[in-house]
Every structure is written in structure tokens, then in C-alpha cells.
Length: 190
Image 1 (tube, one colour):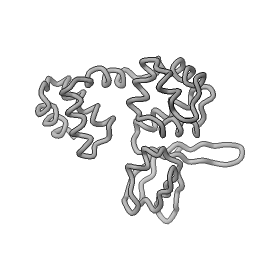
Image 2 (cartoon, rainbow, N blue to C red; image 1 turned 180 degrees about the horizontal axis):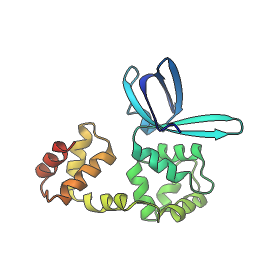
Image 3 (cartoon, one colour; image 1 turned 135 degrees about the horizontal axis):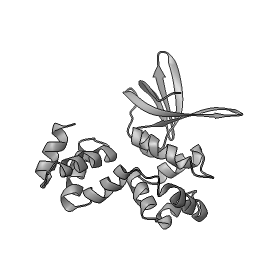
Image 4 (cartoon, rainbow, N blue to C red; image 1 turned 90 degrees about the vertical axis):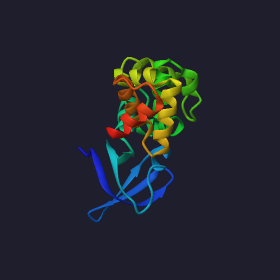
């Protein structure tokens, strides 16, 4: 129903962001990691998820499509609702979460505040097969010294971790071998 909202960020308070669009202030619950990507007074785009409940509506916001997609996968797990999914995204980076799920690392998941062992096991069980080939390939192909260095440089330039990994993966698949070649390819195609 609502895919995204564009507007000026007028307030940031922990896990709440208010975005003004055409005279209407939309209050969105976001992960703390996502909140760090926004500044008051800045025009921004937030991807959204609208939860319809018996007692009202709740709007959740995300700084990237990748974060929203991970959220949507998390809420498909039995026992993980939108608030728990946001809690999980607060406690771990998206790529680290994907790695933990693929590697069946319930210990890492259980270390997230508010997430128990049984729920961690359920997340791994239900999402391991659902992780996209892209996420698995991105993790496998980029985890080299050259790839890590290129990702670090792109992150320094303000590119999200997921987009940096995607750009580095594309560059490596195109034949780039050195950090300079990877960065040149990634920035040329950004």
C-alpha cells in the first residue's frame, strides 16, 4: 500500500522519525541503525511497511530496500512480529544477520537483546532457504582482503554497506582484481 515516503525529516527521537510530506507529518518506527542515516532538516526517502492491527495502524520505516526486505523476511517467521524484527535490526547489521542465518549461527542471533535461543533457532530454520542467491553470493565473493578494502572505502564515501557489497561483487564479476580496479568500476557505475 505505502512503498515509500519522501519528505523532510522534522524529528528524530531514538527509534522514531517524523517525516513531513505535503503538510502531513508521518511518524515512523525505525531501527536505530536506520535512524543514523538521517538528519533533521534533510529531504529523505524512507521505505515503509504499514501494519494494520485491530487497535490501530503502525508505520515502520527503512533507510534502504534491503533493510525493508530483511524486515519482511523476519516477520514471516512464526513468533517474530514487526517490533521484534525492528529489535533484531537494532542489534545487528543486515549483512551480518544474513551471514548468521546462512551459517546457522544461532549464538550470534541469541546475543541480540530480546531475542531468545528458540526464536533464533526458528529464524535460522525458516529463513536459511529463503535467503536470496544474491545475498549468499555477495557474502562469498566479496570476503577477500581486496574486497573488504574496497567495501570499506565505499562505506567511507557514504554508500550503504549493502550497496557497497553489491558494487564490489559486480566489479569482481566483471574482472576487477585490484582495489583500484574495483573502486573505479563501482564508482563509474554508481
